[in-house]
Every structure is written in structure tokens, then in C-alpha cells.
Image (cartoon, rainbow, N blue to C red; front, top):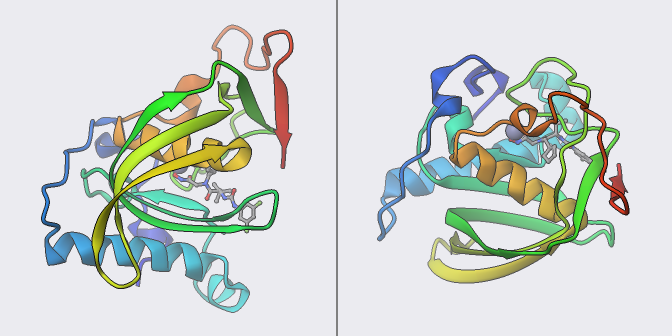
Length: 188
Ligand code: UDB
Ligand code: ZN
């Protein structure tokens, strides 16, 4: 199983790289990687397992964070309506986004960043993502998924990792807490 030891941290060059497209049909190795990533998130949200292995409760993980520079992400998060979003995605791409922005309040964090970084990350409130999905049955199917609010932030944060971008790169350097007029937060 994956633990925090497998997660590379800020300063590691892989986190700054643009990850490679994954070839389809998906190799068994890539399937295993995605399953391990999702299992890590599930374990990290299981109180007993998380305590035993000292896992931070993760909602999303991108393959570059375990030093695999491929366009794979896992998501395991509940939205504001308490709906669980559990996904293993291949080559996810944001095909459209709202003009309206939002930000997570009080701040974003990252499994690959061990310090608190003050500031807001402005992101589109709604996105549409095209990807291939590895289903629980082991099938790979094309999907178009729409996300809003908190889930849109999680997806954008993970897709950023595939492009070598950390949330700290998106904080306004001159005024970390700058918020344009009318932009409302998602409260954590
Ligand atoms: C996270 N977790 O996983 F509301 F059960 C963050 C960390 C950095 C704090 C571990 C998180 O938000 N957990 C959480 C929140 C809840 C309920 C719950 C667990 N990430 C993922 C990450 O670093 N991926 O690369 C950071 C999030 C900040 C904004 C979106 C992703
Ligand atoms: Zn992260």
C-alpha cells in the first residue's frame, strides 16, 4: 500500500514537470497505479488505517505526486450535497470552464507541501472535464464530467499537478489575499 513515504514533496523535480499522456489500451501497470492511488485516498479517510500509518486525509492524488510522471489522477471526495465522487481518471482535460471564479476558504493545502501557505487560489467555479475512466469493473470508458464548487477545485488542483503546477504557484505574489469584486469563497 501507498503511505506518506511514497508521496514526493515540494522541491522534487517531478512536481514541476508536465506529465506524459497515457497510452490506451491501459497497461496493467497503469491500472495498478490508479488502483493504488484510489486505495491510498480511501485508507487516508479511514480513521483506523490513517492513524496507524499516519496518513493525511486526502481527497485527490495525481500520479506525479508518487513520482510517476503520467496523466493519471484519483479522486475520493464528498461534495456539499454529501455525494461521494470516486474516480480513477486517465488523461483528464478541462474542455470548458465558467467565467465565474471562486476560491477555497481559508486556504488550499497539498499532500506534497508540508507547510501552510497563506493566500487564496482563484479558480473557475464550474468546469467540464473529458477523460477516460477506469471503472470498478476494470473497464476503461470515455467520460465527460461536470463539476462545480468544491469538486471543481479538487479536480483543477489535481490536473494542475499533471501540468507541473502547485497551488502555491497560483497565489498572487504581491497580494496573496487579493479577491476580485464579486468573487465568493467555498467555505471549508
Ligand atoms: C488534500 N485534504 O487531500 F473536507 F475527509 C487535502 C490535504 C492536503 C489537507 C490532505 C483535504 O482537503 N481533505 C479533506 C477535506 C474534507 C474532508 C475530508 C478530507 N488535497 C489533495 C492534494 O494535495 N492533491 O494533490 C488538497 C486539496 C486542496 C484543494 C483541493 C485538493
Ligand atoms: Zn496537491
